Image 1 (cartoon, rainbow, N blue to C red):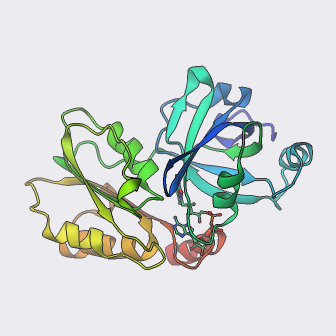
Image 2: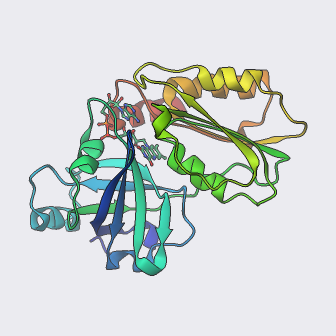
Length: 264
Ligand SMILES: Cc1cc2nc3c(=O)[nH]c(=O)nc-3n(C[C@H](O)[C@H](O)[C@H](O)COP(=O)(O)OP(=O)(O)OC[C@H]3O[C@@H](n4cnc5c(N)ncnc54)[C@H](O)[C@@H]3O)c2cc1C
């Protein structure tokens, strides 16, 4: 493990405590280990970087690779869905996507005792809490962050959340405040960009006042929602959390390069 005093900058070696298929297209992997003892609290919705072992790589060899700070390790970005400090556990929810990828494949083969590297957490993801009402849009990759952000809102919060899932059976429990109405939309083929959330936002009877916005998911869908909210609705982009979490046809590293180039 890299030596640092800042617990957010440590790379921790954790083990798989258990792994369950939560819904047809979502695998929940629970990670544990004494390295979580100084993991910052109340960071549900924050992202973490996963350092993934290769299939068949021994725990000893992977542990050495992580400790040496090797740049060759495959990394992917995921979300802290639940953190149970007393039990030293984190739940990470992985979309099971057709064609797979190093992270998706790792989650599907992960079994108790397997190890993984975890860096972070980054900042929590949240809409402006001073808002009059809240508007959430997320696909399956962003549901872990959106659900955690909803669960952190005050109990008297009101508004709408639209969650796009691959099948009806991918509906999952979310403990949102009672005044937040959750709308589940089915989009069967995630490899085709969806305009359903945009259509929902357009046809929604908008409550009065300023909404606190959380939008994340597939790049094309997020671009349409961002344009609508800023250009057509005139919302202040500095007061919203809007982020492309993945892009059809690109692995995460390529998507990150594209996002950095756009931001430059
Ligand atoms: C801040 C942040 C938080 C995130 N949190 C989560 C999370 O909690 N859970 C989660 O599942 N994802 C999350 N993601 C998205 C995740 O990082 C990407 O989906 C990542 O590409 C998955 O890595 P992979 O190795 O499985 O696939 P990659 O090797 O990156 O990609 C392989 C192929 O799969 C496609 N692909 C990638 N993701 C999906 C998908 N969701 N559906 C369909 N096809 C896909 C790619 O376009 C590519 O063609 C988050 C992303 C960010 C930026």
